[in-house]
Length: 246
Image (tube, rainbow, N blue to C red; front, side, top):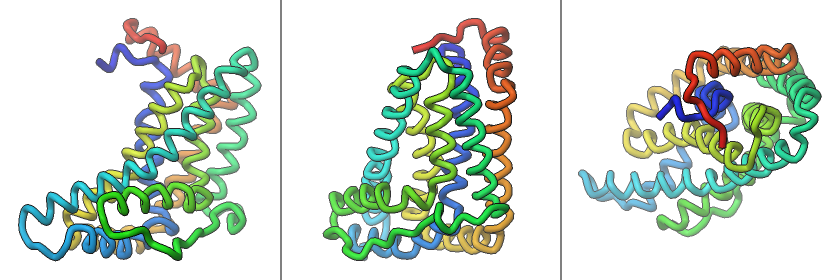
């Protein structure tokens, strides 16, 4: 199955998942957890036991699907845009690589980022229901895009600047980003006490997480600018000759 994927996608998928988790652990998303869990508690009721957990699971999935719709649409757009400019692939890699390096510097806190990581509060919550959870996820996708901009933008530029860029591949890459961002939300809905402990640890180490995420973005950007990304892709194609493109 893995060998049937495009080589550049094999490289990009783990980065997209990691970027999604880093977005979750960022100072502008992690504080949302208490309100998110409280909303899902209203969605699922106060029933104890397995049925309550089942409804919490459905509500959390609906929430994730809500913001995934937004981000996957972004991925399709950037992937399709990259396909249109495929003849200028190398200049695109350099330009997007420089942008990604700058985003990494912002995320690591080495450049002022108040204008980039803006917070958008949700003042009116949707009705308490599974559909309301999906609407809340949709609102999260729209309102918090500027806040998680550095990591999301890096994945979108990667979707648009790599060889064989297409709307489908952009969507796939954005989906895995949503997976990295969404799974912790699902876990939080099912294991609130455990996630509370984890979120406390993440808050204490927010600066370190920001630096790690920033270094990851800088490394992606440098690999695009220097052509190392293309070298990695060729290496995978050599060692996994069954890799294909779509």
